[in-house]
Length: 447
Ligand code: HEM
Image (cartoon, rainbow, N blue to C red):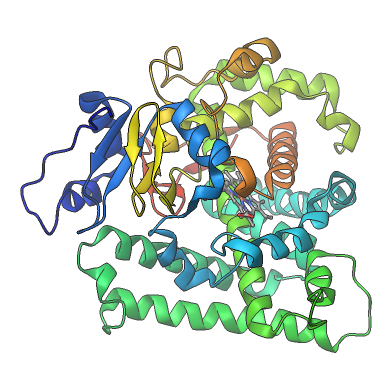
């Protein structure tokens, strides 16, 4: 068996958590540089963690031997907020829920959602006319969060959340922040029951978010109107053996999961896409030219989406440079082996998407924004799992087509109508929370 190099530790209990918590992205990247594509890091006392940065190894975990791997220890923290929904559940229960939800994400259904998406985007752009008239600057990340949560609520749950949009965003932000803090703190993660400031922040926001979600569920249970959305499918689903439907808690878990997973990821990607375009005016002009030629001043229709290769490439390249799900983790259920390295039962395998997506052996000039990398020929020739923003294997993102449609549509409609000036003088760095967010507001002004 080949030996796996280990990142040195000074303190047996804390291990590498301190250095990791200070800058998780640099931690994974610097250690890859020093130790190579597979190394051991002590990110939790008494649990072995391997970090995999090689596409073949990642494929092994997520596809080839996926049945041997469950979600890693870190997803336990996510479970505190999301409950036992699609992202965190396992085994037969997960499979049953996935089968129930899958049809809601079918391409035909998505085509029907296009109008909902364009209406939400247009509503936002209408508001931006006022910003323009008053020469008012704004934070694009906040705007994108409002947009994607509005789209998620309307398209998946037919719910209008206009009145409480800011409250919902605050809750998601605070839950994201408090869970990330738990994960990064060597002790905080073990004392989640103590009334610390962080734990209280978590509890208060969890309560408020639950109230909102339960009111969406209760209103739907009372209504006589028939809806054709995901919530309806979840409500009507029956257990094959017992004939029982989901109880309120199960429904809540699925709704919260899909709502949070579906809004937080796309909003960050869109904010980064606008940021990257503003830093790269030549790429922006190329996109503007494509939009002008294909869509003109019309509202984009379904047929346009496949005729906008460059817009798709801009999104793919943004997901490469700033993958919203910047890390994926699994835990081995039985002993396993990959390329002569032994993985013992219980080992945590961490796959830092961020590092793989900027790996110099896989990408030429890896830090540069070059959407052309995703032109057909280049993309086809690329190794599987060199680019895996939506994960892979059985746990592949269920919302991948939904997200691509939403992001391309929003990008096209924004660029079609407005041009901006970036007001930030310093580089906006990514902040790895549950998702990869901009560390500070990206302030822009319409020109
Ligand atoms: C840019 C947008 C998005 C990115 C980058 C993204 C990324 C991911 C990744 C990497 C996973 C797999 C996690 C793992 O294997 O542990 C995942 C799973 C999931 N995503 Fe997404 N996602 C996005 C948008 C969405 C949207 C729009 C929805 C729903 C509307 C969604 C719902 C889910 C769900 C429910 C799962 C769990 C699937 C399962 O295990 O069966 N995601 N996503």
